Length: 406
Image 1 (cartoon, rainbow, N blue to C red):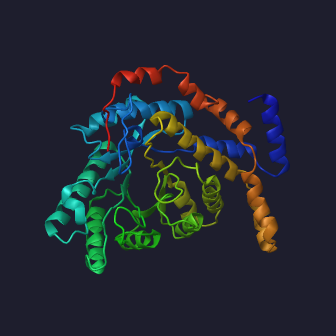
Image 2: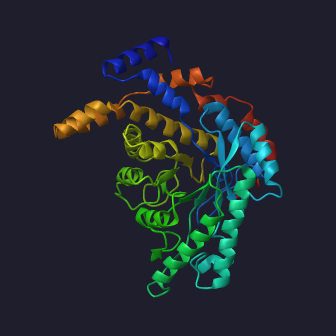
Image 3: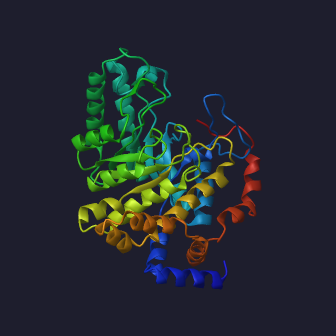
């Protein structure tokens, strides 16, 4: 970045009525949680590809996550997945994170890898299996207490493959019973973030198939339960930003799992396939942050932005850096929307002017802005290049192959 490039950028945005200093302040406040599993070996249904230097345990995952935060200034917390990140002493794990300048973020239960869960976990027709699944949910609440985590992030693979395989309404009841028992175990400052997915691994029905089902469960549970939107968990053509706006208005949007998909839940780097969708999601969030309703503004302030990606063929740390920088870029563009201009066009019912006011912000090159923000935050203006030129990629090669996987 040159001073001249940023000066020109600032001049252009001020002419559009944008408070650039306010935009910079919001960019500096952006926080994106990275997932422990994004640093480990992962694969498809066909193969897990092992890479040299992958972390061998949760402590090394945190060390890699610390590199991403050091270079971007965006990622001070790391989500963990149990039992993938199971350790004997969670207080020691928390202390290790804090020594690295991190905190433990959302705790994610795993209810899909045990043999007993082949036909469901909390929705299984066998009461003993349901009891085991609920015990794991309660275990994760206890882990969250030890790690100082606020959020329990819940995704269930429960579903069926064939018509008649199971009683759909009974399974709905079992799901609610399990969530109610877990909800009662929360401390007052904890939240349950309920995720959904319209298919996979089950192909006929999924017990929490869409945002409406997750929303219904959250409403029945209470104010500490909200909906988690995974940007890859929708049918092609779904208007995700509409879902986001609706959930914000109902004060039930708790967070995001950011990734990108072309066909199904492909778990690609966020913004890699449809960056305009990510931009429009942020447009809805930023617009709601100016709402007169304090409850809506509070909902927006508490949104948890989390990455949820399986980097199958990509090197892990560079892939994570690219992911968070893509989120930062689209957030920056959305902050440049002149909301007053949009509102005036909407009031006049000028369709083209309203669309143009939104799209024009998306087309702005925000590189000078992001370079200026990074300089002021004391991080490299090009975090990816800084990582590749550092000694860390060579240092972790000593780990060899055979690191932690899922």
